[in-house]
Length: 309
Image 1 (cartoon, rainbow, N blue to C red):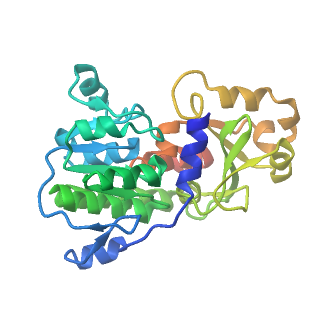
Image 2: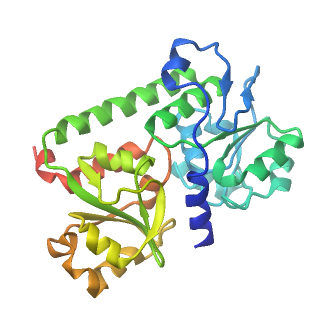
Image 3: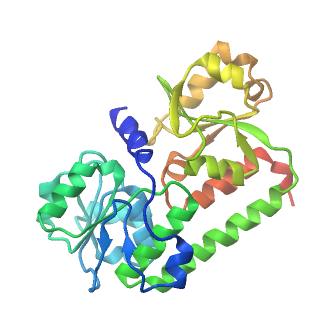
């Protein structure tokens, strides 16, 4: 649970700094900043990369830089190749998402470390002070994610693949939006955890995915917050989305079981009309290109009739 809370807190700490995707595409020679204001001035193609978050790992492999990744976190599990590489020892673990083992990172002798705000600013600065090249990201929306993809493509020598990945995101999002265009906006409550009850608010990448999918957030606050059962009843969502497993990892769908067995929630429309759905926690909670898959799945939950043919 502490790791879940740490992830949520760091995701909402600071706003993204630097060039937008459009600026990067129009002026590829412009100064690049990561989300800590760090000037990215890499004049070589990194050969040994350490990724400090599952979303970064997914992106690095998707753009063709996976063969140069030598270290990842305990939670990095996609693509499936990552798990196989861990099993054979080809990929070394450097600890958890918010509990990075800096000594292990240094021991892998990386020429590039791709970090996230969830790793902790102190951890990021400590690694930089040790002479490591650390690029850190904190994407808040799809535009930020696409910008990260393009930057990683540029600094790893995989710009072409990165651009193709961004094009794929745009095309599939556009297709979803066309499918749900004109459909009724259903109120959606996304529950990340149930003890206490953590839900997704606005100005988050998850909220953006909900809106793309033809829904509207049942809560009006920004970021992620703890709410009460009474708050959910008052919001009366048409649809409830719950993370799979235990919120972040696999196993029994604890949140779904709690929602379905909580008698006080029986008055909520989502419960009354059988519209409680489990969404893969990895898809919905990671700021990666795979959010497109989450959007497609949620759109089918909300408006199945739009995908029947």
